[in-house]
Image 1 (cartoon, rainbow, N blue to C red):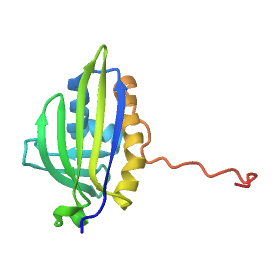
Image 2: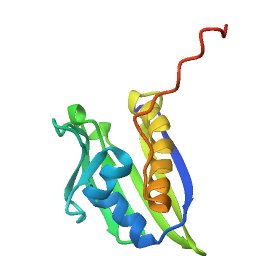
Image 3: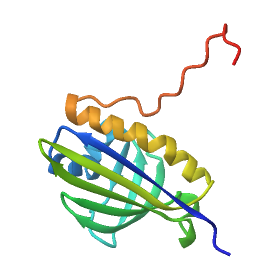
Length: 160
């Protein structure tokens, strides 16, 4: 029996150009500035890609293949934990749709084919909003935000 699948769609508007948004997703030296990771690939359909933590260990956190690449408007990749890379059923899919929108860009990120309730589904629910906020900040102000930030602990006076 196949497991239930779920998907998430995130839309953000960025004061930028489609070319700059697409570059920010695909160029490691830009992705590092807002994501804390580098997306490494030649971005040709069928090629592999790796999501590499920009630290001394250069840890690979996500792997996949490039499904579709139409710069600067669309990129589709598969997405899996390296520990599950051998299992085709473990892969989900991420589509980046970049659309010129007046003086802005409308970026739609669709992460689908996720196993409902999985650790990956929970992780991306928290991850994508902060990553896309950081991308927007970087392109609009020149500075990303801390995507590894954690919620502040409640003050000791609260009883929640």
